[in-house]
Structure formats: C-alpha cells, structure tokens
Amino acid sequence: YSMNFLTPKIRLAESGFFSGFTDYHNHILPGVDDGFRTIAESMEALGYFEALGVQQIIFTPHRMNGVRTSRQELNTAYENLLQEYKGKIQLSLAGEYMLDAGFEGRMTEGLLALEGDKVLVETSYFSPPNNFQELLFMVSVAGYTPVIAHPERYTYMGKRDYQLLKEKGYLLQLNLLSLSGHYGPGVTRKANFLLESGFYDIAGTDIHQLDSFKARISKMKITEKQLTALRRLV
Image 1 (cartoon, rainbow, N blue to C red):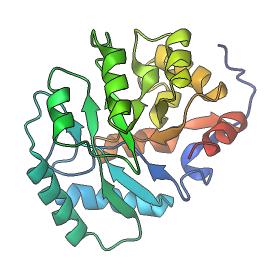
Image 2 (image 1 turned 180 degrees about the vertical axis):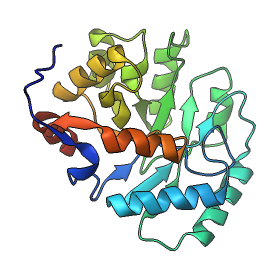
Image 3 (image 1 turned 45 degrees about the vertical axis):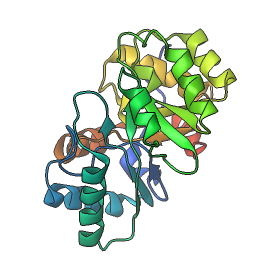
C-alpha cells in the first residue's frame, strides 16, 4: 500500500469527525486498570472529548488475568464518576476482555456488553489463544456478538483471517491512532487496508492517558477518502 503524498490531508480533530462520535474503546474509567488514575484526570478527558463534540463514551476497562479489579470495584468507580460528571456526553460501562485462561470464568459472571449484545475482545498481539475460534464461537452461542478490538495490531493476522472473522459475523473495531503511524508502519498499512475494504464496524480511541493522546490526535492527518470511510462507521 503506497500513500500518494500529493493527496491533500485534513486534520482529523478539525474535520468535524468527532461531532456525534461514539468512543467504543477507551481506558478513561479511573483507577481500575493501566489507564487513567484519578477522577480528576478522567474529568479532564471528558471535558476535552465534549469540546471535540463526542456524543457517547463506553468505558472498556481491561478484564484479564493480572488485572484484579472486581465487578463491584468497577461499578463503584463508574458510579463515582457519574456523580461527578455533569456534562452532555452519554456514559456507559462495558469491558475489554482478553481471551486468556480466565476468560471462561469471566463469562460465567456475565459479560459487560458495549451496547445491546456487542462484546469487545482482544488477544495477545503476537499469537492467538490455541482455542481462539472456539472462544469466539462460545461468546456468540452465549448470545453476544464478538467485537475484535484493534485487529490491525495483531501481527499474526493477515487478510484471510480478517475475511474469516467477517464471514462469521464478528465485528472489527479500529483504533483511530492506528491510522497515524502511532503503532508503527505495519499497523498503519493494515488499518488503511481494513478501512478501505470496509472491514471495520466501529472505532475507538483506546486512550490510556490524555496528554499523549491529545498531542497525537491534534497532529493526525487523514485523506478525504479515509474520512469518508471513517464516517461510515457507526
């Protein structure tokens, strides 16, 4: 994939793209994973997103082995933030589920869905779990639609893997910064391919920290064609 450098580019943050945007993947809920630490930080991020025109934010804290936050602690952190926040953005709570050895146990307590029945899942960047397809199937049999978080970042996935996931009715979620070179040129190439091929269903920021995100998103430029493709996402 080669980018034509003569193609005029627009700054994503100034394109109006974020007006009415739903962020389906972020780590803004404070003190529950490797994302935001304090309510004050989260409030600052919500203010920033409101200024961009974001309409809805679905918190997706990590649910994985090694992150010991209980459902009760998640709910408490969420309730505390709701009490504090008086802005216009619609907030809700879901999770980003690692398909690891503890996943089946998490399923038995009920999964936190994005909206309706969509559940955000991820794997290691370098290799899928041995029973990857079985786990996805299990999620769908339980009545959920798996949403694969940032598929462009999985080094083990190629074109055929993406096609297979789509054929099975699973959804794909784009990390916006993947289009900016933030995760390296290989990820950007894959993200461009998936976006142009119409493989993505939803997008998210995957924000873990406000300052670095702001610095990157304010500089991020995309083509008119990419913007059109992004606007087609939910």
